[in-house]
Image 1 (cartoon, rainbow, N blue to C red):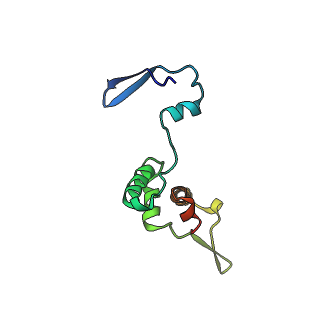
Image 2: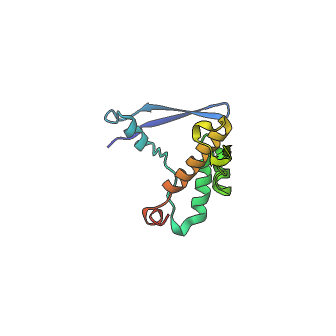
Image 3: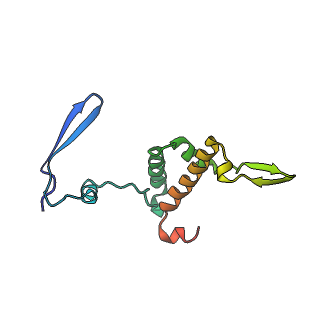
Length: 129
């Protein structure tokens, strides 16, 4: 089975421009290219014996996301307390549509942080959550 025959790396400023010159003609779908280059957009899976390594890899994974600081803060300190509003003497939690733009971003980051952590748990640990 053929894989890449050449991978030409050309320095360009501080970046490296990789150019693929010759790919096997049978590999023609995006999924096949992703497998070939070992592309993986899922968070790292927890190995119970290697927690410190997993923690470091999770932090790197989160730093590669949009609003990285807010996601990391949500993981380290927990989600922000839901904003409330008082109507007719009754205090209630604001609905998503009632949140300000900044509050919506924070709510989204809190949800992303929760999802990232849960996706990084093996089934036996996830079932305990």
